[in-house]
Image 1 (cartoon, each protein chain N blue to C red):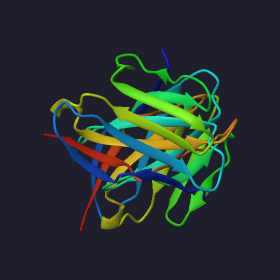
Image 2 (image 1 turned 90 degrees about the vertical axis):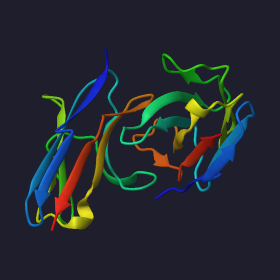
Image 3 (image 1 turned 45 degrees about the vertical axis):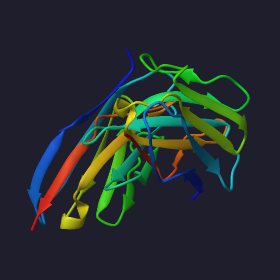
Length: 108
Length: 115
């Protein structure tokens, strides 16, 4: 059965900490893996990953995909309270399925 | 990035009535649209995948007669919640992708409250 699994489900850190969020998948016909940040309403796009081993970077956030081991990680360095959100990964095939999300709370 | 417009943003309706939610791709041709439902503190659950001009593919457990999806054009898909009940109250969100796309773009979401 196809699945997208995120871990941890919940994470509480203090400002300045570095966090690593995980997304593993078992799907057929993989096209891409997407990371989103969701605060109050619709998710906002962070990264799209299609190739293994190529790091995508945007400010304090970075992500990489391993297509052999079937997982991706999202790193956030020097976390800030504004990073508090649910982080979702989704795998795109002919549909798009989400993991359960990781709820990140960054305390001052 | 591409723009997807979802309307309405929120709606309150009486139990037993039907509600239509629209999802439009404004600057690209959305050959595929996905409809999701999200309960508080949970992730997005895929309800159905619709390809333009074809019948939608519903996920297991989603009643296709209750959640009617129409994707008649490359820029518009609609989700109609028929005979809504309070348990249908949820956040509904669409995303759209172009043919062979590796990326999908979200609408703003619709918060439905059935009273």
